[in-house]
Image (tube, rainbow, N blue to C red; front, side, top):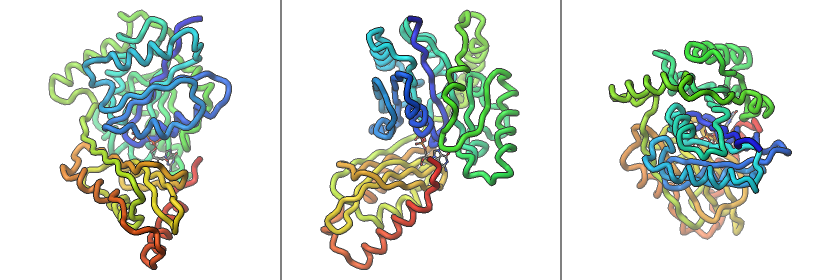
Length: 349
Ligand SMILES: Nc1nc2c(ncn2[C@@H]2O[C@H](COP(=O)(O)OP(=O)(O)OP(=O)(O)O)[C@@H](O)[C@H]2O)c(=O)[nH]1
């Protein structure tokens, strides 16, 4: 058996990496191991991975590409590439702030001999991409290491503009990388065969285009920009007990300053019944779904200029309510607002 292919999944905050991963894992057949890295103290994404995973490991607390001690990543790759597991691939989902260039280098330099970096998939938010990752100046360096760029959330773009958005991303990627595939997607759905087809052949490390790229990255880091990698802050709060539906929804609809990305789950009381909701807000767009009530309420806020009071605001949004679920008109109205929000969230999966 040859080295286990490692597929690195990158993409800016909220672009749809976990959604993409879950789609991939839903396809039966392949034996897949997953490593999930989340920015913040609580690994929310690990809890959201729902498909068929043969082995999983999670790394929380910071960007994989920034950690000085890569032993945790090494250890996870070592474990998942054990021959007895016979995995077909290992997917590493990076945090939204990881620098794909640095991550690719770490995996090439440190991954155990029985693994190989096979593909780097960059998930792009069709609506937010040109406001966040690619501001129209020099094309971001991340394009150069990508083997597949997935322009996700096309359902949020008017139908007649979709091809144009994908073409625009493709044009920008081409300025740095003539080999990468660029495809559009909704709900992270792509043909998994496409992913495995774009695996990069093993290259002589000295011949890598990556080498020049890393030199470029090092030189921009020397100029204080660290490639295209922004350093953001996060605040995370966990509480127990049902929360006030009105308070939490008001918070999610009007998040604190600088919270580009919010995610988490919470439980509310409806009479005596506990109802669970999962929330994601990206660039002011809220997506809410209803599911099993979690034992713990969790909210994570992430942003480059995150309000220093973020944690207090999160704690207040998730404060357990002293109400015992009695149905007052206010509570009924708040539950209806939550339900309306769930209905409004795009059904793309
Ligand atoms: N409308 C729409 N929403 C999507 C699509 N793909 C993902 N989402 C939603 O976008 C939000 C973020 O998706 P995730 O898959 O968690 O994104 P992520 O890149 O893993 O997020 P971070 O790990 O926090 O950076 C969630 O609310 C998803 O349900 C899509 O194609 N269309």
